[in-house]
Image 1: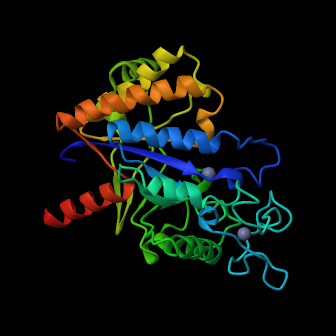
Image 2: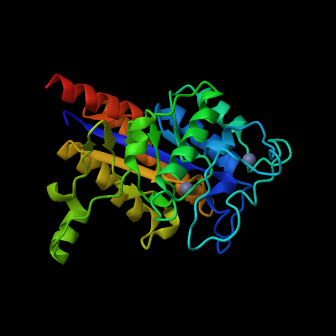
Length: 310
Ligand SMILES: [Zn+2]
Ligand SMILES: [Zn+2]
């Protein structure tokens, strides 16, 4: 790349993220205030993010047709899931079921001063890379997400695979999706010393680069922003995250930070303080012209036009 790139992608799913995981409990009360606070923070530093939204959240409401919820979706058949994929869908509306519909949040993201991207996180958080999700099933899920976005005048260009389980990438090409977030590439044969050195300075070999895959771009994750998973004090922890940003600047590589609004819930003040430090550091590099702060769709466009030129 000519210059380092910084992407923030946010998996925005509300009730859909955990509805098929009865083992995990989720509280939704903080999701809207946290999301608004994020928008204010991003506006302060003019940092655009890619909001990967579950398509169902874009609906004003829904209802069963002849007793079937979302008959347009070809059902998956997962070994780990019994019942109908839409059993828990309340078939209601934003006022009565605000964790299943969130057009208000989409409007707020779009009316922010900063030009964010609205991407896709599927229509119903289907696990696409699982063998129980056929190509046909994913195509129906993606078509429904595109239709829900289209009804709001949004053209989807990027996709984050639910639970990062990647599959059926050719379906993306048929539906105008030009970028997805891949897993962070592994660096094989790394010794303990190399790992330590990498943590301190960010070596060349662990720098993350976009991967061209024919018409689309895999923009791999660099790090998940999860304050709760840290074993260090938050200042030391955020310093490690900042080093990944510095590594990208030094190596002209990609720093792709991602999280769910849920990751900000338990240690909210620490999480926002850490994010603010990162945004400030990124803004300084951007103003020195050694970093592009971009959305997934914009980076894919830039990379494609650079490849076509050369
Ligand atoms: Zn529904
Ligand atoms: Zn998700």
